[in-house]
Length: 253
Image (cartoon, rainbow, N blue to C red; front, side):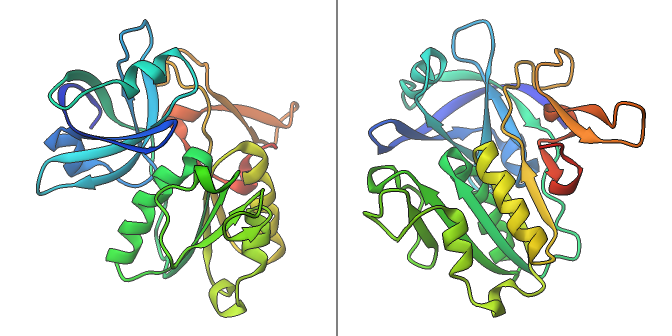
């Protein structure tokens, strides 16, 4: 159940030159969050900033988020120190539908690595056969990587040279057949990952990383157009309230 909490920063880790990994003490969020959900974190400015939950530690009452510095709000959040008290709204949104999933292909690009990390750990703990494909610009951006993952970089200085699609094309059919695809990353990447899944006859779910100002469906800043049988051919869903996870096939790309 979403709620606003006064939380304490437990840990701060720099993953690379512009990305920080925060451990935040909030037993309720740690206990109740599911993969695909997000939180809104206060940064000392008018609007909170949304971040996909990257992991939880229920025993210690912690949840984790990754913050890439792209503006003033994320810069301020990246400067939090252990012991700082912050305001957090969450957990928000709907998580991934894992009903009947016994084999999964997870694809992440950019900050999509964080929610995919949470999903990967959850699926593996549940005994689901899981393949992870990661895409980054170059080696300096590679984070939360595991040797078992299929790694791609645009520059080719780490892993396979190319995009996540090149990584997907490298998979054996034994990994592909009967799998469900889950994807989080830039819109263009998710569009083409969904097309790849469609061509393979696989179900695909995507997490739409829109600008979500309020996080609770009031401000209507994060509209996603989905297919509809009406005069316009579409209707609007709120990414924060109705998503952020959507069936690839329902989204108008």
